[in-house]
Image (cartoon, rainbow, N blue to C red; front, top):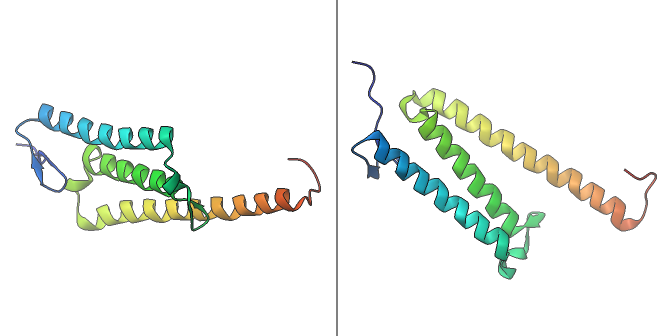
Length: 126
């Protein structure tokens, strides 16, 4: 018999009897996180508009929730939970470092472009 996949999510906190139930559970989880993102995007609470590390706190929440969804999709649908610990770490940590690097570059370059336009010293229009 082939390797049996674990019918659980959240590292075994929720267990399911069939693949159909698991798919509905995963859909509910991802829909819940997406609904939180949509509600925050529509209402944009004033308390989350404060700056934190160069960006609004709301933007950090969007980045974190998106990373959680991406990690969960990779963990469940790409079957990382069934792989060896070394492979899981290699895949997850590479993605985490690349995302952090991208955020750093975006903040650095965005800050530079903002300063150029803010100070009025423009050699040419982009």
